[in-house]
Length: 479
Image (cartoon, rainbow, N blue to C red):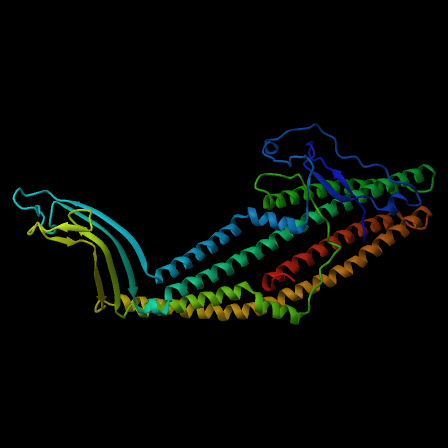
């Protein structure tokens, strides 16, 4: 049912407007009905009160409200949500871990410089420390370092870091899709709250018009006083429902504002696109997307791969390792390429050269610590395998459940749309019959309540369908 909309400024509890709202106005059938236009509905009066919360609001520079689509809301929420950005940070950290693990496989080259000052002994030029051959020793060399081990040749650490990065990416995607569900529900919660506000506004106008009609008919002797009492009760109930709808709309706006803005800002409007319902793919297409794009399954696979590499690394600890260090430069009593020999002043010896250190480490006995680490890694691998199989079973169960939910929500929305149309037509016909004296006031009140309930149910049904699609897309990705 198409509803014309206008920009409307709301006030609540005597406070100034917190933002313009795009809400439906009264239907043309009610404003141009056979009995004339309804009375004007004024917002509740009250003085302007500036609260402490309004002091921290940050409206847009132009003063005009922001108009946000669902896509805009999702983009803003991704920049401001702490949980999602924590997952993004974890993924970035995991990427740097992979870069560091790859660098650890390659040889390293460092520059090393030392000065060793030794106290002299008063007799020999070698000084008081036997490790130094003079009171001045300079070490200036480049150091080439490389580790050789089974883990190095198998690139276990690098592959494990790659698996950890894949796991972090999957968790980031899980967080992103979860945030999408949260924002979608909050976004359409506000849209539905605005629609319910408009419906309550319309129902209040209907009750006001009905009260006027019954009063006129009573004065003309065409209606009993009980009709006036019934109309007055209906008007009071609709007035209370209107206030509740306004409160619900403001609460929905607050809930969405917390997700979208880094500061407290309510100066925005949302686009009502509930009528443009997305298409639900067939189950075979959804199943194929879930098998290909499910982040929970990717996370379980990455966790299993990481656990298997931990087992390989634990086994490699039983094998020998070889470390090489090659130093090239000078270690002399002067910073020079050649130095004079102490024993033979006429002899100049070269200082520039190299020396290599090769270390072989063979593990023999450490009281079972290495074997214990291997058992721990195997336990983790078994658990990761179980979690993967459970994730596969859970994926299939969730896929059936969420697809059935989306299918039922779509069918229900279509049924509720027709019910709302019929309720509007029923109210129109009942109103004509009451004015002609062929229907009772009770029938007219019942028709008004039925229309309100049908419209609210239809709005809730549309929002339920959007939420069901968002939940389904946590398994399949966007479609």
